Length: 378
Ligand SMILES: Cc1ncc(COP(=O)(O)O)c(C=O)c1O
Image (cartoon, rainbow, N blue to C red):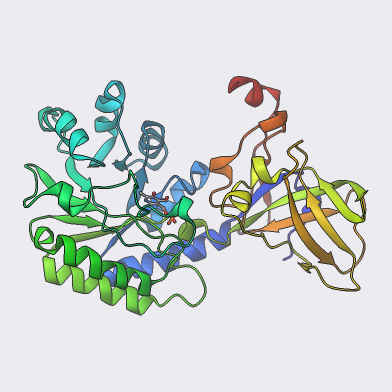
């Protein structure tokens, strides 16, 4: 059944339950056939209303802060794999209590917190984030291996042997990549850290494995994981964020005004690219809009504008089958991962509501936000 937008407020992120389940089923197949542990990276998708479903298929979740670790414990009912570029001393005890695995970003941090981990009653497995100095990520802002990156320890900085108590290594260098990028990355990891892989219990290969994108070669990924497991006799952990919520829903918006901006027709919408879809400006990329194409001659064509006063809060240019009118619905596709987790109330703009289109074709409004949400954070 087609989605009935009259039931959905504007603006609203709408997650389609059946699409999330489809992704989770696929990822679970990879998990079962490869023997890897695949966990959700909360930084990409932390809509905890869906955690019970996520937990049915995946092994758990990874946190990059105390807040995320606590959310995993409270809403997913399991302990977190935690990695943070630097832990705050005043938060570390709590982080420990919420975690099964803790990875350190530097030798300093390992030295600072090692004894606290060892003293803890709960057994928490310690790891180190490594920097293999190889990534195939075209945008520097998403590349953890650019020269001068603060993320991870290079082989020179690590020295010849693993520090005492370290049971795992963590490497995150990928972004929306396929299994062939992983294979080429592993050449560098094994060249630089291969001797240490024989000494650890687990290797966390981070996120960026976009295994739910059409055309992804799952058989190849499974063979890579099996080879690693048997060569080094280690557990393999993958912690994708995007792949879990990839193409599972959209941002519903509405046309508020149409202005002629010195010859360019601009439809001003009740959303903001800066506040509600920041990756479109940061990466940058042009999101798909339902029923629209890139600018096409002879068709009604618009720049889509956000409702903040930021001059650059717009996206060019989209052609529609018929002219837009005030009140029309405009749907931005694939707006579930890295959106809700990144929203701001810049300019005081309201946060979009959050809803679920359920598998039985009913709509559930999970959250809507008002003045209090704005006031609370400023
Ligand atoms: C350490 C770490 N793990 C996992 C992820 C999730 O990556 P993705 O959402 O691209 O799969 C990220 C993303 O930045 C990350 O920094």
